[in-house]
Image 1 (cartoon, one colour):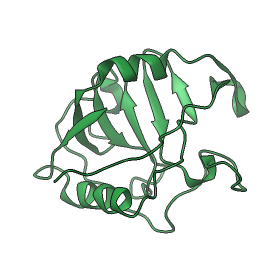
Image 2 (cartoon, rainbow, N blue to C red):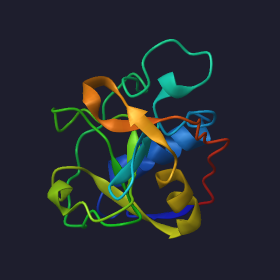
Image 3 (cartoon, rainbow, N blue to C red):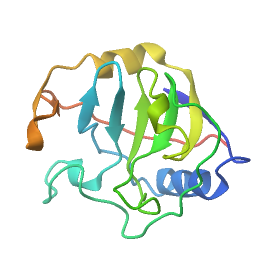
Length: 152
């Protein structure tokens, strides 16, 4: 998948994401939360093979300030995942698989998919089972990010 970033709307978020990519942070991580028609989520270091910790609970060891903006959360938009605290994003991100307008101005959208929609569709179609809390979002098969690259 190839993304175009919006540094004019979320400069700190874009720089953080690119920094983590350059450091190889995302290499070997997996999409740990998949909800077809909504989003696919990845970027947790606890999703790497052999790493202790629950996937979905890890980060880079710091937090990034929220940069909410007017971009709509629609298919192909990449945005930062966070906890209840608006300034709690770090490394986890999600890619919208469908319209998620209820997230607008509450999560930092920082780019959009420009190629690889077929890959997004395959990830979103992975079989899932119930996870903690009963949400049917835990992949039954590993969907790994082999390598992430920044071209500019």
